[in-house]
Image (cartoon, rainbow, N blue to C red):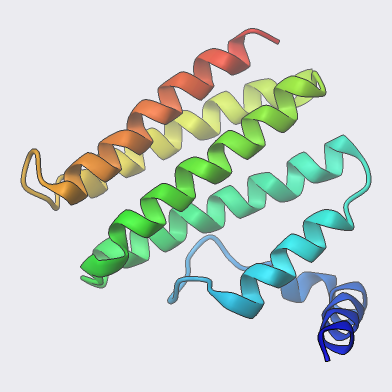
Length: 153
């Protein structure tokens, strides 16, 4: 049964590659099959450049999920989506730094600055020092750390 499911998802991703892509806004938080399809799609990206491009898309999607969880008042998902965002941020930065994808550097530094501004705005929805505020502060700090890492390539 698992082989059939994996084969079906791979076939779907190959036939409809844009179906695995979403817009920068979202009205849900990815779970289960959607995340599995993302992992399969990433696995099917063969060059470091294409992997980085897809990881950049996924980072944008994780930001949209964080924004959705805050703006739709789905407080239970704020910590999860904030943590997921920082994980994807690290994955993208590691991909770019480890493969020395210097052509990505300036665009990502700009993107990280835009994300920092957006996440700082989201943080204003929470009381200073609360768990949600701290989870979002972690993302802001992580953006700074990964921006510094990008400067090294």
